[in-house]
Length: 326
Image (cartoon, rainbow, N blue to C red; front, side):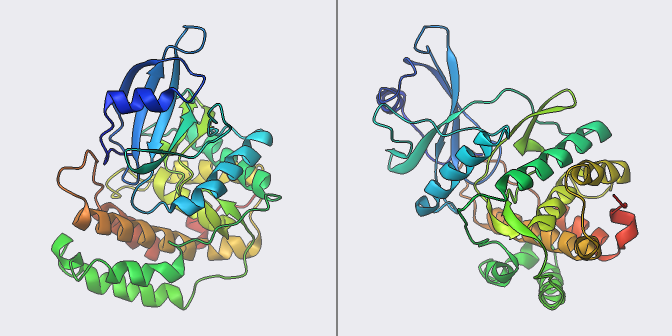
């Protein structure tokens, strides 16, 4: 989440008049994240008791043509009992709108907080929630290719316009060597479903040790389920700077996942490679954003080198140090 597009109060009030949500009370931009413009919106509610929503204006990597996929996916997952935010329809039944020249949606607000230093119990609960999501998505008939999958990493590196070495000397050579390594070893016959593909701690809402919501599905796509777990492993099991790995969180996260959906032998064997790929993917997208984020954007840039450190860790890891048996 972030704010690239400013929304005047008058325009927002007019936008909300299409909905049965009362009148505008307040709106606050949300600076976390890097993809879309997001606001926490409070209204009077239909009965005057007050209500909260998330307003999202879609920018950058989100293709408006993909929005019906996201809307249908969250409807499907919600119907299956997953704790996900639904897109809200206006009085005419429309959920996709336009605001300030951008595609926009009003989205259900879920209670809970995101944790910055997960405990073992929280990691277990989050891993279990991911497995439940994968099971719920098994009969979802929609699909979307992963544009940031293995075939997209080399073009993404190229799009950094030779500026990777400005982030750290030698980074471009390290990235190119890793691309060559992974492209020759990437597993292509593991179980797939629609995956979240970005289930960082800030996209999991919790109260205590209980998950209350999974949010921000705008990278969701059809890909390898164990790759989704590898993305989550890198996000949940290291300090934010990537320098320290917390093995206890890793064990708990994977145990939580396997309590619902045990990993196959092939998934276990491929897991270190999948983790390397996940680390490279976020290194590259963070590097691109580091280089290209407008200086006046209300957005928190994220350090690409935190994922270089994760990549270095995974390059030296073996299966048994990452995955315990079910």
